Image 1 (tube, rainbow, N blue to C red):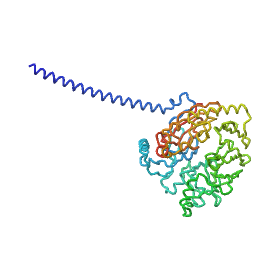
Image 2 (cartoon, rainbow, N blue to C red):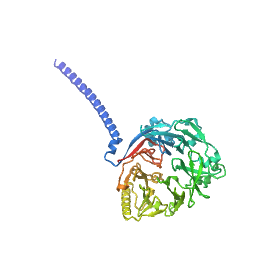
Image 3 (cartoon, rainbow, N blue to C red):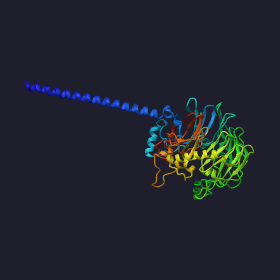
Image 4 (cartoon, rainbow, N blue to C red):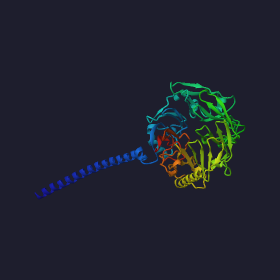
Length: 514
């Protein structure tokens, strides 16, 4: 009997043991599940908070938060046009780029994988156009039948869109249209924003002349320069006349020599005519870069003219200033105004102030000549602002006071004397050289300096959520009194030399506190 009792007791212990193990296992599974859910919830909440406008902007003079999702991810916005109140048209190319093997919906997973594996799928040379509605905070495709065009026709959509406000027409003119038209004799395309019609027209261009047309001078006209350089079209370069060595050397050149007198023209968006605008005061040695032109509210513009770049020469040969009253260009030979500049401010009087390392220059509203300021208090104030900027630039970007400031810092003008300074395009574009690689992720790529010139504020700005990379004047667009939209850039954790791997999927908004 006793033996039977012991057997039953052992069975009971074994059942209790397995029961307790079962309950313990179930408890652990449930606990781990709850913990996992909790961690996911915490991660989700943290992610939401990290992109929450209220959290990011709380008690800060300037902040950056995530905006609307793009229809096509964008690396660099080529053109931006304001169509009507609250709507903006953005153009970019390579919208699918290196992630073309995967759908846009699977963009996040592919971007991470591409960064890890350095995949380089075939680049698809397709233009893209998307319209942003400020009120709805939403992007949508521009309804044009791009897919119906041939590969050769599509190249005319890639760069160069202009909005004719008077007739509500969107003109699709490739940069090379005016350079090559007298060879190609092809029309350009027009899309009417109101009736959605799609037509073609030809520009009225002087025979056998070439032009380089880029930025708008005002709502009706695009600023152009005659193209009298040794520039060769693609057809000319590959005609068989030139050796492979010449072609390689030609393609590596950053400048084209000017062979005769250059003049400025405008392209009228309503009449489609190229019209004479002004002569240069001093004929440029090299074709001007439109990215460096400063357009002022009073109709003036300042155009620095390149010198031949070398280690022993200055970047600029001279400066041309256009005066809308006399309709003439005036040369300024003190290039230190640009070479040693730290900050440029256009004040309420229409005066342009250059804050330089050791002095200040002013281009007054009624003048065509830069002058050194004789106002002691203004000079003292400006020098204080400059010293603050240089000190913080050393901390944020490790820029020495002896360095050429413009080689390391790009300035994004915001509203009414307010600015964000970011790491320069020149530094972002550096390629890995042999065994020397850029530190990545490089924190300098995301840091900013916030400046409020009129209130003498120079402070650490908000960190950027993406690498702006090939930043242009089209990267940031004003969409409100104190709001700016960032379109383009590269996600964090992508190699700096694989620029198409991770283009930005979202826009970001810069907001300034009133």
